[in-house]
Structure formats: structure tokens, C-alpha cells
Image 1 (tube, rainbow, N blue to C red):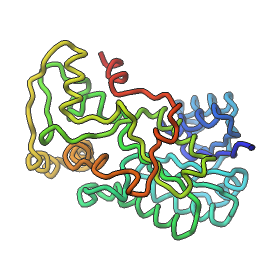
Image 2: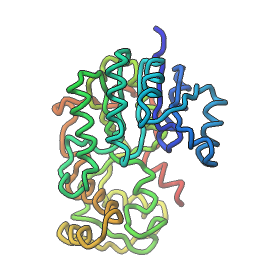
Image 3: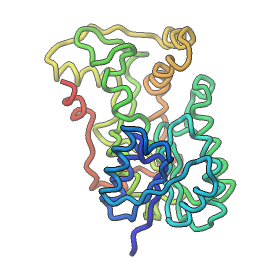
Image 4: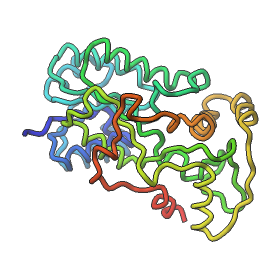
Length: 307
């Protein structure tokens, strides 16, 4: 069976770059839609050159240029969007292009976080999740075949500081624990998210489903994270427990967007938005169950890199 041709939107971004490389490594003819301005930005141009050298076909265009979207979409079978949270609603024109082209077997929109239909803090999140939910509803209304990827948090987002606001490195003396510290959160490395995502591209089991990632070794509470870190540094930390009420006050007292990190922590470690529901009964599919051969980085392995 021929491998699907894959178009990556946002290939010069962090996750998008990994998606493009994963697509190539799995043998998919891979395309990347790149804005003209990206070629003159040093960091992005280096990625563009690396992707091109690896075999990615570069297509010039943007989410604001309908003709370039149509031209790109008509060359592929699968579209994966990895644009930033700020650009989520910009996918509306892309959806229109996919609908008009009529050739796309699967669209994977820019989610790659907490399931926006399961989130319990929409009123706090400045439309961060409601925008993603809005895109889901448009995709479904237009009857576009899809897979949604719910990986919860990237390891690079909170783990480098052990979820400590204001720090740049993991704590060595004292640590703040939110709530009772027993609610479990999920972290997955970006390269692993990309690998799991590309595995879904031609898999009928994930069509029109949410793929949830909760890898064994990547689901831990704050108390468990601290215990792992203490073992690695050979030292007990002083624990300061921050109540739900205090964290909510801190969120209210901190201007947007500086309070978003605390909002993500409230969602993960107090509300339990990553783990409060059962994957199967919710209608989703379990990524690690579907792809047991994918080797991924555990939280413990990631924390080793911070020593």
C-alpha cells in the first residue's frame, strides 16, 4: 500500500519540524507550506534548508493565501497543521481549501495539547481551548475526515523547572506543590508526539477519533515528580503546599499572558484535566496501546537531562 503524501503546515516551528522529519522517516512523501518571510529569518531558514536537504518538498504560501492553500492541498492526501495557539482560528481558510479540494483523506488540526472537549477550565483560559474546540466543530460540520491528537503537555513546557513558576531550572532546595499533589498529569516529548502522530496517518483505527497519549512512565502527580527528582539529586526538598484557592488568587492577580503557566498547572495538577476521564469510554483511542513498538522518552529519562 502506497504511503500517503503528507503536507505539514508550520514545519519551521518546534513540533512542525519534528512532524516533517517523522513523516520522512516513515517513508511518506512530505511537503511543507512555508511563508515567503521565513526564508529571510535565520532560525527558520536553517530549518527550511535542513528539511529541503532531507527530502521535504517546499511549497510557498500561507494560511492567509487561499490560492496557495488550494495548490498545496491538491498535491497531498493528508494535511497536518502545527501552527501556534495564537493561529488556531487561521485554520478556517485551510479547512475551506480542504473542503473545496475534496482529495484529503485526513486532516490533523493544530491541537497537540489537552483535549479541548474535556477541559474544565475554559472560563479561565482566555479562549485558548475554546478556539480549538471551534475548529473541531467546523471540521465535523464540513464532514472532513480527521484525527485529533491529545498529548496533554510537552516535556519542554513545565518539566524543565519541575512546574515551578519563576524558576529557570529545577528546584534544589524547596518546591511548591499545588493542591494535595496527588492529581496526575501527562507529559510527552515533542519528538515522540510527532512519531505517534505520523503513525496515525494511514491507520483506519484513528480515523475520526481523538488519539490520546498517556504513555506509561509519563503520567505522574506532583508528589511523584518531586520524589523522582529527589532520588536523582540525592536530596529531600522542603515542600510548600499551595492550595487551590491560593493558586486561583495568584492567577487572578497576575496579568495575562504571564498567568498562563499557572493556568496550565491548575488544569493539570488540580483539576486533573489530563486524566480524569477514561479514554475508551470517551470514544477516543489510546496511542500507546495502538502503537506499542514506538519507543518514547519517559519523564525519568527526561529529568536525567536536567541534572
